[in-house]
Length: 110
Image 1: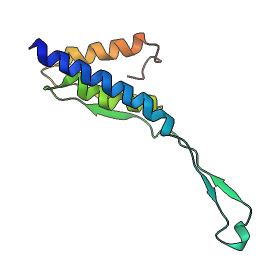
Image 2 (image 1 turned 180 degrees about the vertical axis):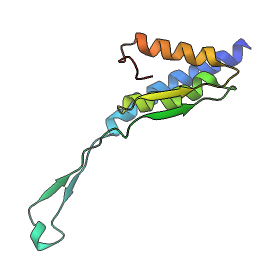
Image 3 (image 1 turned 90 degrees about the vertical axis):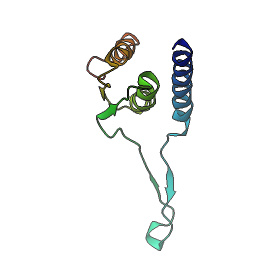
Image 4 (image 1 turned 90 degrees about the horizontal axis):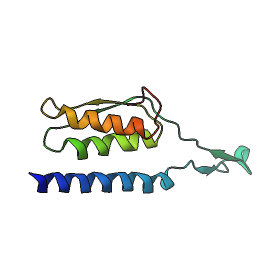
């Protein structure tokens, strides 16, 4: 029903906003190394890097929302995505992939 579709789209938009907001929290760390005399005055720095290709499997009951909650965080952190749609709702996932391409993501990332 259209009511359920509206709820799903609203939740998907919320998921995108949350992923964007969380990007501010994804930073490296500065770690003091002065736990031993040899490390006195030294610091280590962590650097976060993408882990690689992510596989997103979407269910039929919320095909857009569930795909968004997997795909957007992966893309936002630099990981390409393979989306496996539910066999009952492949057009929703196909349209999402098309929109992501139109948004300017490099070919082959989704």
